[in-house]
Each structure stands twice: as C-alpha cells, then as structure tokens.
Length: 262
Length: 262
Image 1 (cartoon, chains in turn green, yellow):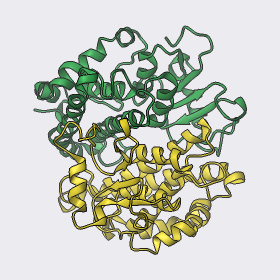
Image 2 (tube, helix red, strand yellow; image 1 turned 60 degrees about the vertical axis):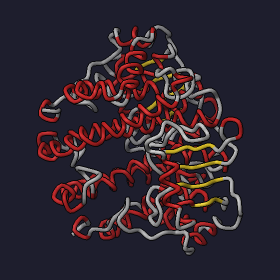
Image 3 (tube, rainbow over the protein chains, first blue to last red; image 1 turned 180 degrees about the vertical axis):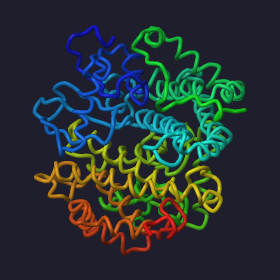
C-alpha cells in the first residue's frame, strides 16, 4: 500500500530496516489497506528524518507538537491545531488513534473501544517482556554483557509468562467465540487488538521456536484458529508476501537458541 | 470522596492496602472530586471481591464482560451493553476512559487527547521500569532471590533511565510553559497525564530518596514547579491528608536502601 499514493494522510516514523514496534502500526494500516508512507524505509535519508522528528533535544517541533519520547511516531496530515501536521507517539496511543479513524476499535461503543484498547495493551506488555528477556538489566548495553541474567529471565518468561498471557487470550477468544469465531478478540470483526496480538505471537514464534512449538496444542483457539486466520486475511497475506514486511533480526524479537527451550 | 455517595458510578477494583497501580486511578478520581468506591479497601471482604471480578479462570463475567488480565479494573454502572455494568482493565485504558468522561484529557481535540495519552503511557513505562528494578528476573519470585540482578538494574535505572525520562518531561513542560505555566504537560489545565506523572515522581522519591534529592535541581520545572503545584491542589492536598491515601510498602515502588544512590 505504502508507495501507491503520492501524498498519503499517514506517515509512520520508525527506525529503518527492522520491524520492531513499528510493526504494530504497519499491520493495522496494512490490514485495512490504508495508504501510508513508512518514512524510515521510503528513502536513504529516512532514518535521518525519523531522528529529526524525534527532536530529542527540542521542546516542540515547528508545528507545535510536543517532543516524542521514542519511535514509533505517527504524523497525520492537517490533523493538528490550525490544520498543521499532528505528531503523536507511543504505540498504544497511535493504535487507539488509528482504531477510531479506520473503524478497527470495535463497534463504536465505549465498551468495545476500551476492551480493544485493554487487550492491545496486554499484548504489548507481553511484547515488552519478550524484549526484556534479552535485555533484563540495561537496555542500552549489549546482550552479551547480560547473558547470565537473560538466561534466568528467559526461563521465567517461557515457563510462567507466555503461558499466563496465552492462557488469558485463549479465554478471551473463548468468551467471544459466538461472535468472533475464534478469529477476533472483541465482537465480530477485526480490531487493532487482533493485529497486535498476532504480531506478538508471530514474534515469539521467531524468538522461541521450540517453546512455541511445544505449546501449540495448549491454546487451540489462539494457535489453531486465531493465528492462522489472521495470517490468511487477503490484505495481511499480501502484505506478508511483500517487501514491505521486514525480516526479524536483532530488534524487539530476537532468536538466541540458548534462551529457547532446550 | 469515596465514601460520601452511597452508590457512586465508578468502582475501582484493586488489591487492598497498597497504592500500586490502583493509585493512578485513585488520583485522577480524587483530583476531579469524582465519587467512587475503592472496593478492595471498602470492606473486609473487598479483596475477595477483587479476586472474583478478576475471574482468572473464566471466559467472561455474568454481564458479558471479557476477563481482565490483572488489576486495576474499573467497573462503571450502566455503561456496558444493555445497561449492564461495564468492566475495563489496564491502567492506560481506564485512564483514557475516565479522561474523556471527567474532562481531564485535554481540550477535546484529537491532538490534546492523544498527547495526554502518550505522555501518560510514557510515565507508566517509567513506573514499570521502577518496578523491574526490584524484580528484574522473575516477577513472581522474591526480591531476595534476584538481589544481585536488582543491584545492576537499579544502577542503570538511576543513571540512565530516570535522567532520560525526567529530561523528556522537563522538555514537555518547557514546550508547554506558555499555556501550562510548568504545572501542566498539555494545554492550560489538569489532565490524567499530570496526575500519572506526579505519582511516578512521588513513588520514585519514596523508592530512591537519595537519587531524587541529588537530581532535584537538574529538572527545575518538573521538580520545582510541577511536582509541588499538583501536590498543593486543593483536591489532591485533601486526598493526600486523608486515610484513603495508602502508604507505600512492598508494592510497585519499594525502598531498598542498597538500590539507591550510595
């Protein structure tokens, strides 16, 4: 989608070449076939543009937007005060913005809107814990310098945390099965909670392939219905097969065989 | 506020006796003088009621609400489908719900609404990192069993993370100084981003008193204007002096002298 329209409304600002937390934003845009520009990957100067938008030493940008703590950021044409570009940051805040605009935050009721946000936040908590398995002590230092702690953290993550979160989402899918058919967490249609949870499961399959394979049948709705159904949606399938879908590497989800089930 | 109305619209469901993440919800309710019941602390059976609402082995509650992953939860009278009680969970989702209903999510524009949410999420990220200083490896195990890792994590947290987050919020306050006078992060009035950031700073003052004292003058707006101004608001001041304000202990913010600046 991203390169077809010359001036899309939405610009994603995220580090180039890695899926990272930017992927949660890309996925809901792609699932809804919404045109956007992935600034970091759109040109060779994209990374610099992301750095500039982050304005990490400024008190605001030239349009009056406050500074952003970290990418991802979303810039939306004409949506700010006086028609200026609006810049927002924080994955859940961007998702909640897009959810409302793109009709992927439930049925419009307060209830579904906040259930979608709550479930997305819970999936993102699991994503953060997955990150901390390889950086348990110091986010700015190398994995190799905190490997002993990473081994302990990963053991706990695999044995306690994945099962707790997956068990929770299995129950949510079960509770919504009549409407959602195991494919949707809330109501009878796709929401950004679904794309977000899907990406976390997919990232964990990359990072902990043995652990996830061993747990596959413990969560029949999540792993047997939800995960493949979303992957098979026309828009998502086309996206996953395109070069806009970036490969996992040394980002949020990392595959260190020693941290996986042995 | 909480005990004056016999049937308030809002019920907070959180573990009894500790401030924890429930405090982010209490503070915005108290700041806006909104009647609520703090179920966990309202009676001797409150803790059981919180456990029951969490329904950690169910697929939904009797009103059709999905399960909650963890407290805090907010139950809102008549706000669910068909007038049933609505149950939502996740601190940022509850704050965003209350923000809209209580008029403490900016000026009603998309811009301020999402800046408030983004800043609140960033303050809560710092809150989570503060928790992880005493539980860097395994959330369900004792501090004493991960003390070596906690010492490393706390050093990084004090030296890199507090300064990064505080420096960020100092810039946000500076960028909004014309409207916010250093007292508000967004616009010219109180939002739930303010009460949330305030609680994180207050919790850090309890957990790392030496570190915070040493950094006091590095962040003049945050520590010199914002923090005391909010503490001195009539509604907050009354709350902080009441027995509804629970004491810090062994919860989210913990004071272990060995983890503080030496």
